[in-house]
Image 1 (cartoon, rainbow, N blue to C red):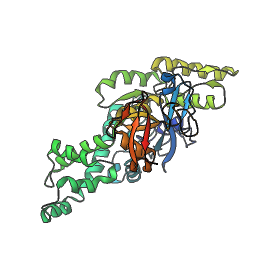
Image 2: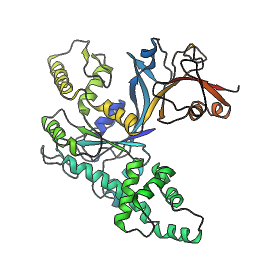
Image 3: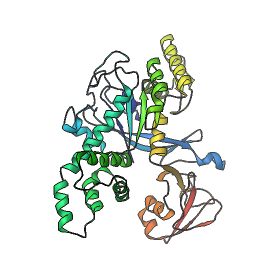
Length: 392
């Protein structure tokens, strides 16, 4: 799974990325600070099964802190986007190529309105967050439409020459690099009535639906440590056609760094923190300012945006495999060692293949916590602990 952190240049997206991953990416108040994409690991946060089962777990592929399971997810921070990126403006071609690898997008938007359409610093309120959201989506739509338009005539000829070929098969082959599924293509064709004779408006309509299907977006309404941004978020949230989270990336990054230095106790996503080391007056005031921001927002919003992408947009659930369902352990005795993020609707046999290919090839069945037998078609539920049975 790959989550793209994207947006107009100079809106705080690299600060968001660094706060989420603790990767030391270059951060500056200028356009195009990020040229080559930064890649790092963050975590989806969920309640660990150990809390419900009353056991002490021993995580191997993830972390458990105070009953919170932190499951690794990969993030990519791509070059900033400008209007006209689909025509190669700015770092458009690189941006659009990099971002198409992502399964979902966190669109970081400066809700204080402190940057112009090119990402250059401007006075607070001069920018328009809603316009930024609209142009970002439009650039992706134009990019996808361009992929189709460049091949419409060639694909039309293929369809005419081979009557057995299906329209959806040709389009799927053309757009497979977007991480879009064949079934999604079929559904979009039914909704849009797209053909190879469609005009530009119809092509754009198809591209827009394809983008929504394969690149779902959560809006990280950034810089909400500023009153202007908080006011804009309250005023505009209802008019945004995507899930939106009020964020303060700078606050999150400051907290993560302070926790790293053992100045505070803080877990990403918490609503507060504890100061555990003496700080000077300047540090104390900075921490109190952040605390006030968190009271206003509920938290810094960074972890919430990641969780929204993973659990809401991508529909993931957390599943724990156990070699021994009685002891909830692996073969080495580690209790609840692994936590997997799997798509809602995943069957037990599909999951067996995710754990190890040999398990799927030699699959027999499984057990749940109550030691009830599970078949290959059992649909995994969030928080399930399962033992997979397979021929040795």
